[in-house]
Length: 134
Image (cartoon, rainbow, N blue to C red; front, side, top):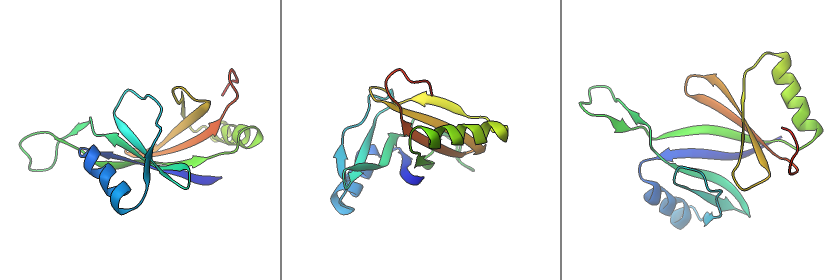
């Protein structure tokens, strides 16, 4: 298993993208057609930072109006397809850990999300052959 990416939710999508591209040296690259705006930023040919437009309002302490809550949304680990993926799902079931599966649009990628605590999410992602059950 290896760290796959970090997702940053931000109200300043373009400014954050410019920072990571212009200063850090990442490249803005292809991204699946999710329903929310964002960017995938690449290093060495891999998308390591996923930027997502902040759409969830949050009430800040002592604030009179709702503001968007920027945050690091989740950490993701890439798992080898096949036996490693099956073993992960079996361990989750054995420990009665609930999870949610999702398919990445227009790709052969499957995501598995585990909510460890309010606001703490871990994603596992793998490749799946077309038509294979997750």
